[in-house]
Image (cartoon, rainbow, N blue to C red; front, side):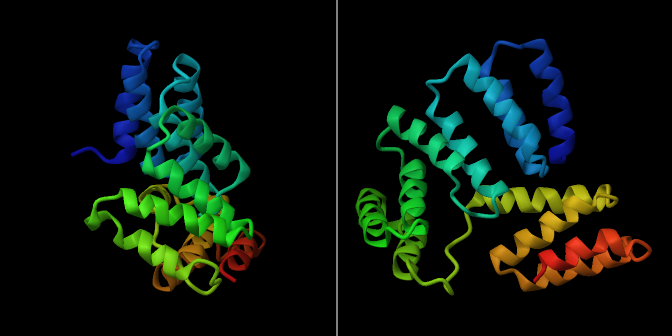
Length: 214
């Protein structure tokens, strides 16, 4: 029944009681991610990885977090995390998906699509739908690929946090930009309208938010 921010507060206490254990850190990182606090989640994951750098799930979550913070782009930092995960668990689908997507974003479309096709062949039929959509739209800039759940969770968490603490211009800028990247025009316009009300007396703070919507 707890909201992500409340859960993060509870788990912070658990982590303090069990500083050498991985699982409390993992759940805390997930709660921080769901609440839209990407920097805190990154710090928590890196702390967990210092304890056990052979946890593929930690590297995978770190990679997803870095993609989410980059508005859906598979950055070199995300590639590094997914590569570490793939070295530990070569068959894990999430690192394979993002490493192939990184190649497509870098212009190596044929190579990336070939890796996606291999991944699709290894997935259960019911799990292939979104990936097949990605394969069909690969190399088409106008086509939006299915939203990664981690990215959507980050955006929703950020929106919830801003609803509670709206005096955060960089947060509104990032939220508006995220909705633009996701292609969610309705949510973008709603967030932009809320930001305009919040900062109507501060055009200097509103201007970067307006720019992020374009």
